[in-house]
Length: 209
Image (cartoon, rainbow, N blue to C red; front, side):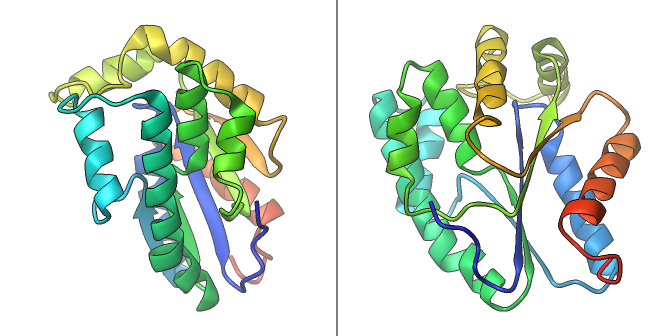
């Protein structure tokens, strides 16, 4: 995998479904914009590519394919995402914030019985984030949050799977640098305070904040 050699910064938020990463992504975007930064907010899987559309059908249980085929679709969608959205933003010295990245597909893929090394190799042309946040929230809390949305659960939003998936997220911290695990069960303000402190200390200079 490639390190970010572009002038911009690449930040990723990840975690179990219902962990609150989308809320924190939005808070960070608004904070950085107020501080004068140019920010590109994006999400995986995308909704624009053909691969992304097929992925959504699988996640919504409208189509059944093998775990290997699903991972290949994720990688295809990710390559287009990098080429069309993330890298152009980084080249322009913007901060690209992605709600999910390959960490999600690795965690859920391994939980489906796939080999982590194969998944990493499948994504070997992808860009490494400068900073990643995993929001740690218990499966019980995640499911409760999902149910409160009042929408149907997707393929991965089943409690019995979430315990195993989180174990894989923790394993990923041994394989990749710059990952920070944050307690996502605190208030959104407390969670964001922790995130802000890390960004201040690890990614952006004081003058940039």
